Image (cartoon, rainbow, N blue to C red; front, side, top):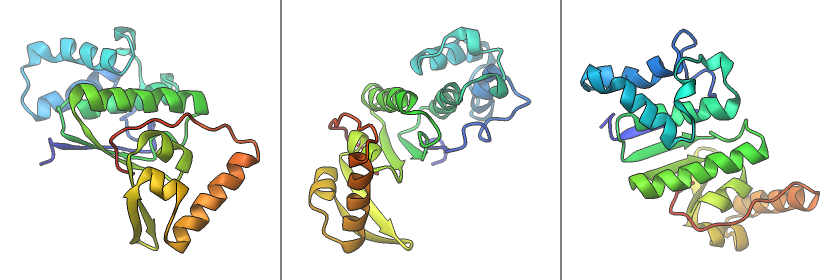
Amino acid sequence: MRRKIQYIFQDSYGALNPRLNVEQALVEPFAIYGKPRRTWRDEAVRLLEEVDLSSAYLGRYSWELSGGQRQRVNIARALAVSPDLLICDEIVSALDVSVQAQVLDLLARLRQTRRLSLIFISHDLAVVGTLCNRTLVMHNARLVEEAPTGDILNAPVHPYTRTLVEAARAVEFAGTPTRKKATREVVA
């Protein structure tokens, strides 16, 4: 089951061992799951290319990368074992808006090309509206509402959900940049 479900953490820096370069971080799962050593470097390059990074990053360390680059390496590392499900825990919250959009587009592309399912955990309703087709709202560790994302954002039922949506709209109207809405099959 561990191979089928991979987790990507919010803290892209803390998720990578600072003593390992990118290549070492990417091939570590290969050693654990018995992939032939002779294929490791080629697979690491392929994974980097899949997340829009070049092989020039193989020798770099996490502290030499930007937040977006580190998060892409973490995504590549999660993909190393060909999972069926990625759990993405606030993975774009520490990134600026333009890099967030790039990572969200990358996730949408990977979902299609790899036929992945995503569970996307976020407090940012704009991100949820961009990426997710179904949303679950939790309050005090309880599920309070579940519906298609459009229904949640346009006609919330639960009082807590209404409060969240109203707060997000207030921020949006205050001048926060909005993201283009797209239909994607992801659960938030």
